[in-house]
Amino acid sequence: MNFQIKALPETEFVDLFGLTDAELAERQACRQVVTAKPGTPCRVSMADAEVGETVILLNYMHQPAKSPYQSTHAIFVREYAKQAEIAINEVPEVIRSRMISIRLFDGNHMMVGADVVPGDMLSSVISKAFDKPEIGYIHLHNAKPGCFAASVHRVD
Image 1 (cartoon, rainbow, N blue to C red):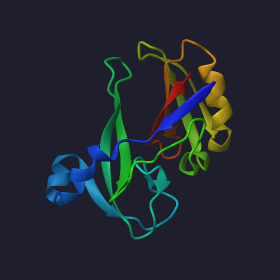
Image 2 (image 1 turned 60 degrees about the horizontal axis):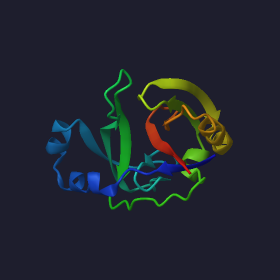
Image 3 (image 1 turned 90 degrees about the vertical axis):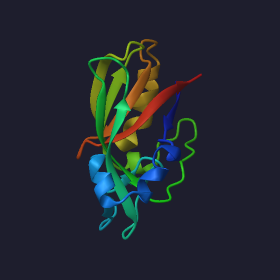
């Protein structure tokens, strides 16, 4: 079954970089300068930030659905990040290179399955999951540390 991984929209984060550190702190966010690569995966560009780049670390509501699984988690966004255009059935290197926690949700936003898989095996795991009609969408998290990575949607 075909799928597409979705990057977060850059428009949601552009204004953050104009805020002061105090204003970011009021939003439970902070500015950081990247000191190592890999290690700071941007959820807009879907690439690891380069050493010396500025990122914002913030809490993001990645599961806004009204269900027991409604959830927020930490993400990084690179300054001047451009939204990644991810092809159908493509798994970006930033995900492929990590251990990934996969969470399967039905149309009622209830988790109906989960697993932890190496990112380089993710493509086949996602395709098989979407073979089941009850799977509405998938969320991916880095297993170590467990930041939200991306949402995945069936493509017909």
